[in-house]
Amino acid sequence: MKRAFFDTSVYGELIDNDTHLGLVAQKAGVRLRIFGSTTVRRELEAVPDITLVTRGRFRGLGLRQLIVMLYNQLIATGGEISDNDLIEVLSLRYKIECSKLRTSKKDMMNDFRIVAAACMHNMRIFASADKQQLSYEPLFREINASYQLDTPEFVPYASLITNLKNEQEGGDSEE
Image (cartoon, rainbow, N blue to C red; front, top):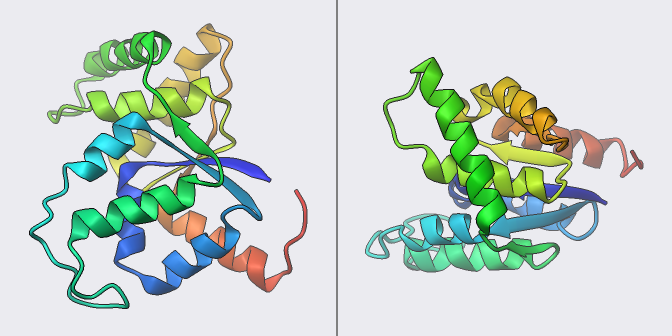
């Protein structure tokens, strides 16, 4: 079973697509052991609850309620990683090195904490719908190597779904 970590953006994408949600839910605990973090939880809990889901089987529920429920269900297969000093140190190193590139104007500290949590806990897959976050993979890999940490495979959300569909069509073959 592959250890997987989903960035906050993945949960938003799953809420928008019942087919993708069903596919990931089917693989959770069977092919994927999904982990979350306290940073992801905080970001999901910050989603305004006044926004109501207007389509799909969850119509009428508040978005925050729905997305946190989904998160809890999926991470039940793996668990939640608590932020700690080591994650903070690694995420600060990411921030320092990325600031030298001057490619982003947005505050990415939570993104860095999320990636650091996945790296510190030996995830095999890191899935995200955030293209900017994914674009920093070579830098994360370089920094992690200096700490003798493995870097998970960074997988765009669309590729995650495609891979899971292909796996389903081809039978659940082992790695």
